[in-house]
Every structure is written in structure tokens, then in C-alpha cells.
Length: 113
Ligand SMILES: [Zn+2]
Image 1 (spheres, rainbow, N blue to C red):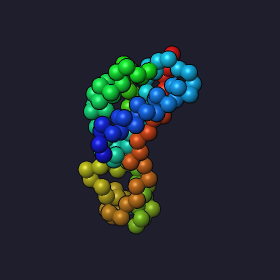
Image 2 (tube, protein in one colour):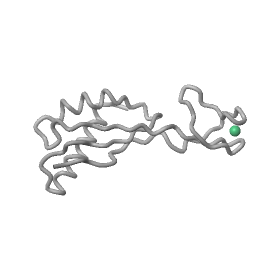
Image 3 (cartoon, rainbow, N blue to C red):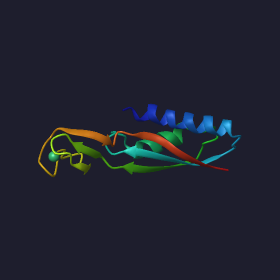
């Protein structure tokens, strides 16, 4: 995924929400990032600082929380957290795993003045 495009969509969400609710300043944006989404949190804050200049979200802090990768084994039915560098079922060693969570990326909430 392209970090700049992602950051732009975060800013769009923040600006739209601010306009809708008559908010003058967005102080914090809470974001959930799946560990399997490939998004680099450090890049997002960097880009956000650049493109938010002059908007209601200028200077806002991005609070990013990682969502662990959850998978289910199609072989034995095991379900749980999986290391992204070692994707296999810890119960039976199977590799037919289905992703239940981990690819998400979304704005959860905003803190505003
Ligand atoms: Zn299994």
C-alpha cells in the first residue's frame, strides 16, 4: 500500500468529520492498523504532518494501534494469533490458514476541540 495515499484518506476522513460536526481543531486521530496490512506507522505520521498544514487537523497526533494477525486453520480448526514471519498452524503444522483479522486499516475515532 502507498503510505501517502493512505495518509491522504486519513486526512479526508478527519476533515469531513470536522466539517460535519462544526469542529475547529482535530487534536488526535486514533487509527487501527492490522499487522498484516503492510502499513508503516512512522511514515504515516511524517506524511500527515506535511499534508495537514493549513487544515483543521494541522498538528494532530496520530495514535496508531496495531491489530494482531488472527487466523483459522482449515485443517484442524485451530484459531488464534499468528506470527507474520512464520505463518503456519501451531496446532497441526498446516499451512491452509484463513485470515480473520490483520489486514484492517481504519480511523477509529477523533479527539477534537
Ligand atoms: Zn491446524
